[in-house]
Length: 424
Ligand code: NIG
Ligand code: FE
Image (tube, rainbow, N blue to C red; front, side):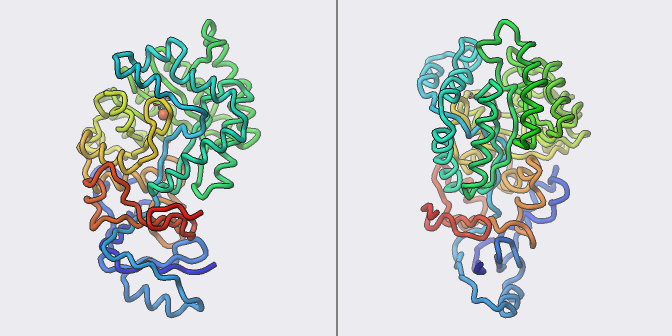
């Protein structure tokens, strides 16, 4: 495999020094920028990162002539990491969105059998091949926006076979698409129509049948629950997450999205890796998450699209929480693959700084999906996942919003996007 040497970057942004624990509080502003730096990629991993002269001495010692990428006028960052998506599904929900524009609420639509349950119908009807093709298109778009690793949840099957189908498609995508896909089992995403009169029976199905099968086939690393008024109670969520832990799946939780519900507190209690959404999280919940080391995965695109007030990121960062950012890509509350747009919304609607936002979408996001030793920063030995943005500095990346500034994406040492165009 050939070597790549990236030089002349305006800013070489390493986000280094946090592979063991996520960046919290003030550390979230530390980007580890190397002025006049050089980055050498070899055999799919980062072989050298540091001052330019040293990079060139390193190259001279190699037996191969590297392919040189001139990053003049650009910034170089780690591949972006999206720690919360529902990217494997069939169909779309623009009709529901039109209804919401006319005043219907997200939860009303779900309670009438639409929303997640509408996508469930379409996903159940789709073959594995069809699901793969639809989802692959979305992964292509993620790559075009600089995302090289993402998490994907099940939760639109809601039967044993259809949940397994979704997770198998996620595994196929991981194996056949350049983007790395980390899987989460989310059988507890909604109570399916056929169990509406007996939600407890569905919780039992999740715990007694789905979880053991998912674990047995090694189809997921995490278990997630939509803990929300009218969906799964705190008590049901706790049982599901504890059962997940016993089956070897690490807990995650959709917490306090629509109403304050004790989801943040539950995340701390069960030792969740992350609690996500948190729009209505209580002060106590935030404190308990900080003590328990739970990462807050914030989704300002979802708040925007549901016309809700965004999560209180400043309060969380000041409380010492590690914050990560994600698209929440799904067909209902966040139909976008643009993590850079989410980063802009995090600045504008949550008052995060451009530096904090970059940390939140790289190393902290990697921690939220258990991949911080492989990705999320430009450090020797990590995967050669790199993005060149056509931006003179990192603040410009979030300032010039709603456009795609990605010039080049390298995944596992291979150029997969060139001049803003997919080349795989
Ligand atoms: O994270 N809130 C629950 N689940 C998703 C939305 C899924 C959907 O609407 O299809 C979310 O926002
Ligand atoms: Fe979600």
